Image 1 (spheres, rainbow, N blue to C red):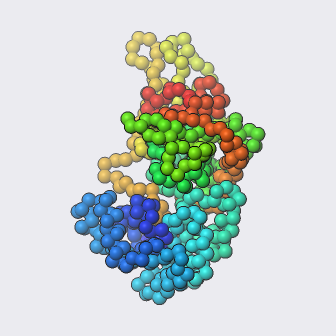
Image 2 (spheres, rainbow, N blue to C red):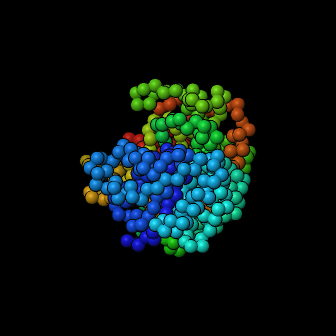
Image 3 (cartoon, one colour):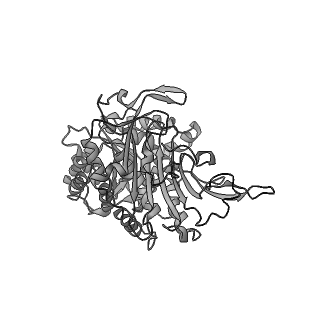
Length: 501
């Protein structure tokens, strides 16, 4: 295990939802596992004028909702010794000067520092500018790292503008653009599955693969986040970041090594190889929808336009589907279908890879049903698993076939399970950029979706509707190249042939 340097983690927005649900509990879990540096300090910055004692009591209340009493009793005292609080009201011009004095004048606070921006994206530039102006981002007596949550920009131009504002005080190695999706164990397993096993490498190309589907569905609606979602939509929220990252991992060439820069170099090449979508071809490559009222889990739920904070005439998409092509030697002509939606029939994320049919169907006269292709499927959530579908002979005198599923679970009894944020926080402390986005990755992803965003922003009169609890709007079948292609809704055999909405 790598020895970690002592450091100070400064969390802006410590009283917010992300810090309460993920960051503070994640740090507590890492402390229980003895994975944090021994002398690490956690400095929480919030708007409220709390004392350190009040903040420790607040953190205790957070953790009591997620951990059993015996864990709290055994581990909280050590964790609480790391906790500090700094009041930083937005209207206090001296808050950053006081923070600078607290951090640099106290010998018990390690000089290596991480600043985590757990705030709204619009607040990133101002906070970083103020930290830079008081000298807290200068690496004169220790390293400085800044963690930025998605979304990074609103489109390509705004992402470049945001980046320019960061470069006034930071260089690229100091910036950690976090995408929690890349911290999920199964997402990382895509790399292990591809590069630690030679079995499939000869088949991983356009000669054998028919198409790839990358799908993320949620039963949840906007859940009180209408203010954010109205300005984002499903295409920005999920596809531009999470799903395009999964595409890059599936499509990339083997890197020279697992070094962060080598890995990110290959992801960028894959993203840059995606065929640009001209504005006059958007409707052939993209489909959007918006959920109406329906039933989820046996209960009635309102439509998107009835959600609090949503404009009555909103054309924001809650469902988005794309057909993309990676124009390189390996993937020439293979469509990649990306899909995401809220208020869908199930909550699940998976990568479905369909193989081509054999060049000659030798069993067509003995088979009772149409030919079934082979699939490789990587479940991401809630089922993190690997499944392969193959054809076998049905027992009996005649040569009939059936599809079987070879199921592999990654977890063994006694394996440790960590949340995505816990692993990513540890990576920041270690200075490992492997699972964080480089600026050219961000720009390449925006170039893919920008033409679609421009067309959709001009076409506000109509958006396809779908009932909550369904698999999305009808009509998305037009994205597929052939009649025998369809959206795969499940990792199980009984989900292979559901209708193509």
